Length: 272
Image (tube, rainbow, N blue to C red; front, side, top):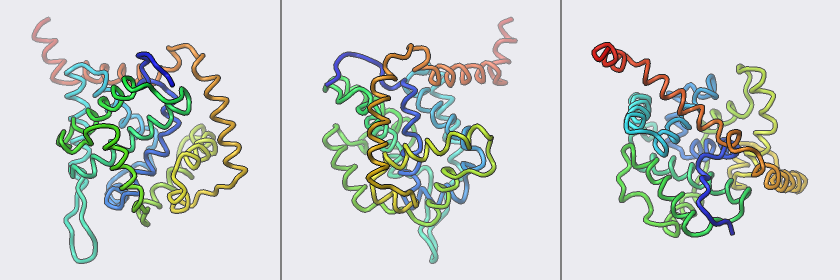
């Protein structure tokens, strides 16, 4: 069991779980329909991933100004993602607290899964601190604090209940496969996708592998287990600046954008 106050939230290895978290979100039917109708995820996957992680890093590590900015960006992006229910289909809204709970839950469970594969189980203090941080990621938007499960045991009950009935529908599958099998993205992105698909498939529950059409076998499982054994040895010895590079990059870009904002430029002119 891992003890101490290591900052697991900033670890770049969490990117290995990005595909898992996204597909878990898309498997929720209302989210799958909303993303299929309104998102440019499949055309701009790197930008969308950067936007999501900038929000996460901003909420957890940011200044008050940075927190306000990432909240503003996400709320602005969510504004058009809504459709009322009609006779042909159920509606959806990106402001729906239950859907925001599910998104935050996928981010937390995925981060916990990756950290434990690299570091082993966390001690209670570290695990509780990580859980509180991911609660903030959800409740910074429209999710009322009382909707976030009160502790890790309550979260596990919520998670297992959701997974027991979770099935990806056509819209979510179409978007998910568009992300996993890109055709109109940068060459470097297409080059890394076979490895990303493999890790994503191995991290998903078996039912969702089937829903998204991802092949899996005993041979895949053995390779998957070997991969994580190697990563568990190699990753922790990397320098901290490398392991935390993406977090630092996202926050630096966020701060740069804030300094360039018209309001900030006006304030600088006033005080010059």
